[in-house]
Image (cartoon, rainbow, N blue to C red; front, side):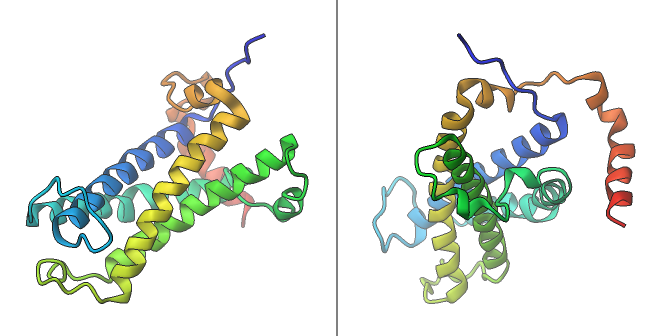
Length: 201
């Protein structure tokens, strides 16, 4: 019997989709920047030394830092906490192979993804655009940025795998639907946001 498709809040889908597109774009352009200028740990050599790639990568980073990520973090803190690591998550990990084990692993993966993105944007803010053109690679911020890139790619793959395991195709499709229920209308978002902040006062 096919699984029924779960309903995801429209605001979650919007913020999740916006962050996903920007982070994937940043990851791709980040690799192209590395492939252009660094190549110390292997490369595909599909790009030439192109300063504009650094600017494009930085543009993705700008929109993540100042628009998409702050809004998503506020949403996660206020309404999406259950999808992140909980107080009992690491206890649930001991129940290997059970449904709760998979849910716990999904929460850890979701949290790891957010932490990796935070490390990436913070380390990115401490970098100088002249480092790579000058082959000046020996900076802590750049090393952290490279490590964060690897973790983001792995966490993104795990995020998709865990979501597919926990909810299957219906869960994945529910995140890209564009329809919403009347009570989830964007016209009501302002009041809902105000109510969330009032509850935490």
